[in-house]
Length: 239
Image (cartoon, rainbow, N blue to C red; front, side):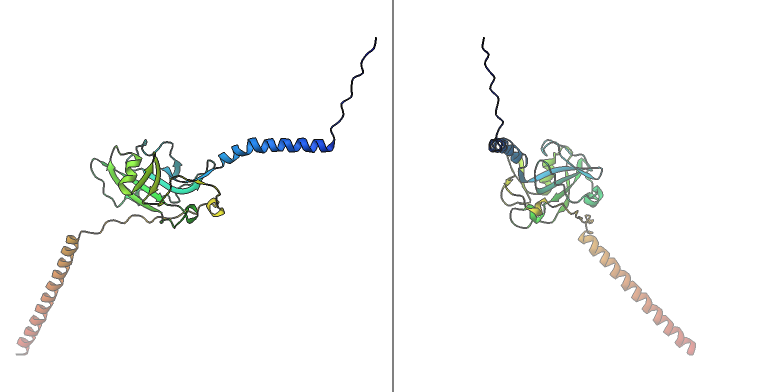
């Protein structure tokens, strides 16, 4: 009875090993790389935030679905960002800073807004306006979208806020193919001046000016009377 002898397996040659490694690398690049590229996609857009205990928090709902309370501060920031990064408004003023000079109105609510138009590096073209803060006096049921519309012009498409106060002039959440080093750089905090209380009405100013002039005139008349009286008394004494 004969038995067949098993055939010994030949080890792979170095050339074959290199070819196999190249094939695996090619498959990895073809399958994994597109997924990584999709996750790293960056966009130029307006982000919506809430100020909570002095810190900005990314809004979990759209501005048309959220109703801020009286005394709240909302934030908007235009920037280039992706899923792994969040660009917050660069200023964190208090409610008093923003709305302290705005009188409360019965049946209304006051909501502060910080509008950060971003850095030059965030813009596709042009120079963004300086960050600013505004105080909205709106109905108590007003949503975040209605609060924003009360103090700024808004351009939107399909529920997405594309431009605030005409910034940017064109585009809406467009993809950024290559993010510049300047756009990737860390933000530098900025300060927004506190709102100043309104000047006194013109009528009040005029009244104040008139009162001051009257007092000055009366003072001059009294002083003149005293001088005349002193001169007359001296003449009588001399006589």
